[in-house]
Amino acid sequence: MREVAILGAEMTKFGIYDKTNVELFSEAGLGAIEKSNIEPDKIEALFFGNCMGDFEEGQLHMASFAHSAIGLKKSAPALRFESACATATVAIRNAALLVGAGVYDIVLAGGSERANAMGTPLATRTFAMASHALYETPLGITFPGVFGMATHMYSEKYNIPLDELKRHMAEVAVKNHFHGVNNPKAHLRKEITVEKVLSGMMVADPLQLLDCCPFSDGSAAVVIADAKTAKDLIKKPVYIAGMGQAASGPLYYQKDITRVKSREISIKKAYKEAGITPSDIDVCELHDCFTIAEIFALEGFGFYEFGKGYDAATKGETRFGGKVVVNPSGGLKSKGHPIGATGAAQVTEIAEQLREESGPRQVEGAKIGLVDTLGGDFGTVCNIILRR
Amino acid sequence: MTVELTFREYQDGLEQGKLLGLYCGECGAVTVPPQAVCSECGSRKLKIGEVEKKGIIKTFTVIRIAAEGMTPPFIIAMVETYSGAWVMGNIIDMDADSADMDLMGKEVIIDSRQVKGDVYSYGDIHSIVFKLV
Ligand SMILES: [Zn+2]
Image 1 (cartoon, rainbow over the protein chains, first blue to last red):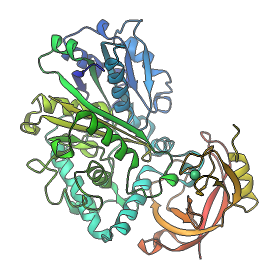
Image 2 (image 1 turned 60 degrees about the horizontal axis):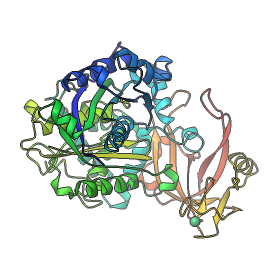
Image 3 (image 1 turned 180 degrees about the horizontal axis):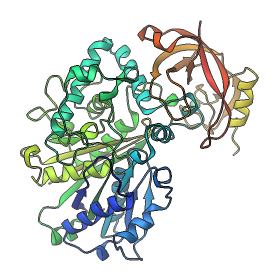
Image 4 (image 1 turned 180 degrees about the vertical axis):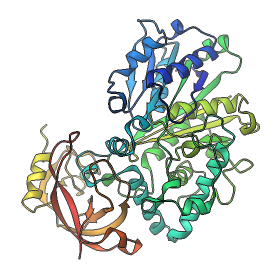
């Protein structure tokens, strides 16, 4: 395999938009291309992530229209990726694999999503389509419901009283909003308090409104190339040191849902490929779709033993100045979660951190960064480790 | 290779009051609901058999913001049957607002009910429900 690098990376501000998915992707995609010092005709393939364009805009086969809208050449194939919330990370990993294998030299990968176009009831319905449509969705399961069940199981398994656990979970939300204030592209750019989290509307027991990330619109994209091409084009390529991806099927076969098996397999492979251990990670963008999800990820990475990661935010270990800065962008919680674009925005944040371009939220001296994205009810996890 | 127990046959079982599973000839695990291979070891040596309709609540949630077409609040739980297989269903014989951590570890009887499908679904299906013992 050839060494593979991230060139230009760009995201739109996350929020609520009238602009179409293709327009949002045009901004991010052309932004990434410009930052790579190339023209669109140098792109040899488009790996485009979108989960629900058919419900959002009545648009299937969006990749082909996104391709045309930014002037890619007709010989560059356009592919659509869908892996629920892990969509864009999976698109980027697959682009990197093909560049590594020598099939392409320069690929554009990313995604776009506009869940707000659907309104909350239909958005909730379509998100639930990523659960098992025969055995989970008909029960009325929602993603907050899945993580609510996982929270209750964690509380019981490790004998942490639910009230106590919920305070520590609230600290995760407070920390990520604190980080997001320094991110001009964040959807919810405001500080919150533990009391505010704990007084929010109940969404799915025991998760309250501010335990949950928002439905966001937005797009992000990155240009991926072999290391040699990258060095010729830009000053500070960021290299892909290791990647992993795993699948773990429906919730009822996973049984103990305090342990995300797909993550444990994926991260092990990524560490091995990168030749590093958990303590080598300087900065991390992980999948905090719900506050409890950040705790599961910290444990899954081996940053903490299982059952011991719940008070990391409370102790300040995941903030700026802590052991490892987790979600300096504000994470899904504050930056937002347009599911087809999320992974590409995580890669964008880590790439900027490693190039020391993050301004007031720069993690000083960050050399190795981790991207973690979870799709569906733990069915997919994809990890990408980047280095300077 | 044909699928030993189809979704349709599993559904017919529920309609007749039976919880059908697949008993693994390699590892002994029971796979419920059905699929082509053992959910634990991947073996294709599977035999259809009935599963005792009882189990223990392993976790639950109360859905308060529901998807289009659903009326909250309602309870969803994961239950470990005495066969070792886990199933998901709705707890239907208690007030959702009184669900709390006391539910954990409680024994339930497993049954099913018909759920109307919406325009995006497979159609009307029988889905699992739990009643506290
Ligand atoms: Zn088996």
